[in-house]
Length: 217
Image (cartoon, rainbow, N blue to C red; front, side, top):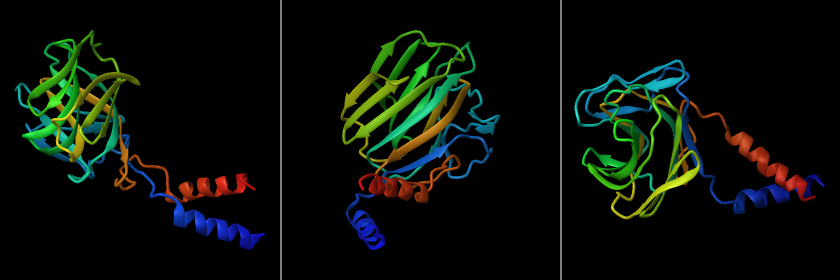
């Protein structure tokens, strides 16, 4: 019986597809490891379990980035809200980021009561709707090839097909707003497990696979 289980386990390891990885940060440890800044300077701080950006009174965007320029298809999720009512222009997520001139974004504006998305400085799609002051939203972006699906609180809100770089880093951005973020997560093939908020170990994944083997007996 032991040999039988061993043979099944070896077969499982040899035939199973590579695990899809996940990188996350819950901003609980006030560490900026694996993050870099770009664009307009901004005093990004981690406190009380949130990532906070300062109010920068210019139209250019401040970015906080992580990941690899070679990341292609992935799902990016973050919770976000705006802390200032006056102004409150733009904040949100960036993805497929290659440079300050080449990236895609999905964000919201209290001032313009708009959720929108686009590439670099261009808006490709938008949805006019009330944006709550200090209201938490869950933004989720799913990118696969040229297709981009964007969700607001698990409801598909915006889409565009083509125009964005086909690979790139991920992160958050702000312009004329006091942004606040929590529970940042990106997952997909080719992404290594890690990040300050990563808690699921490879041992745990192996245990799930072994449980599947046992359940079939």
